[in-house]
Image 1 (cartoon, rainbow, N blue to C red):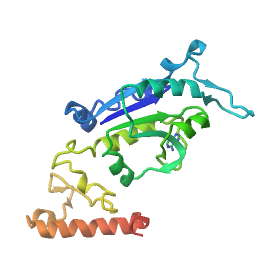
Image 2: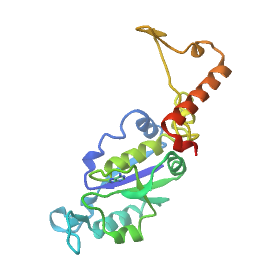
Image 3: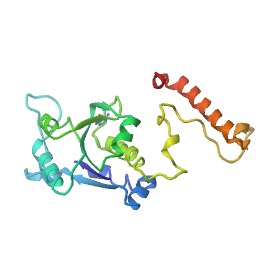
Image 4: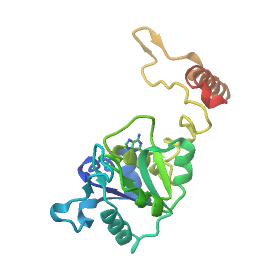
Length: 224
Ligand code: ADE
């Protein structure tokens, strides 16, 4: 999968995908993340990419021309399954959306900055608008990093048995159960005995009950 990310602050994303599972996905050739500087696609002097909003009001708006130059240039070499604009007024991101996007071939993520982007670009080029939560970030970059990480780790072949996504929180609408590792006892705090029993069936049942209890207590909305 290719994930291309268009941004006016590429530095915010540099290094974000060079570690851990994102690095492994790229080393295995299953994922390629490209960060594209929007300023390289403007024809305005001093690499200007934003301007004042028509009608007045606070903040600057990303202009349509550099965005269209960027997407049309990228589309010459890549066919995108989705063009995603990250925005607090988009559809709230969840695991189900991550699962479904992980099966695509190529994604283009557009990061807004300042007050947003010209609505005409959203109307004519964007296929999905996604928010990562009900709060406002300074731009879409951190949201794009969140999407890339959560989608990238789900690409078939990226995770192995040990890191399998099947036991992740939300994968079956349940939060993950608690986990423990060595030592068996620390300051008198013991690991639940069942986990030492070697009885895999009972351990699975215990984990399921714990997941259910945790979800009921913390996220009853997931059980609806
Ligand atoms: N840009 C600014 N805030 C955002 C959010 N909550 N989700 C996605 N993109 C954003």
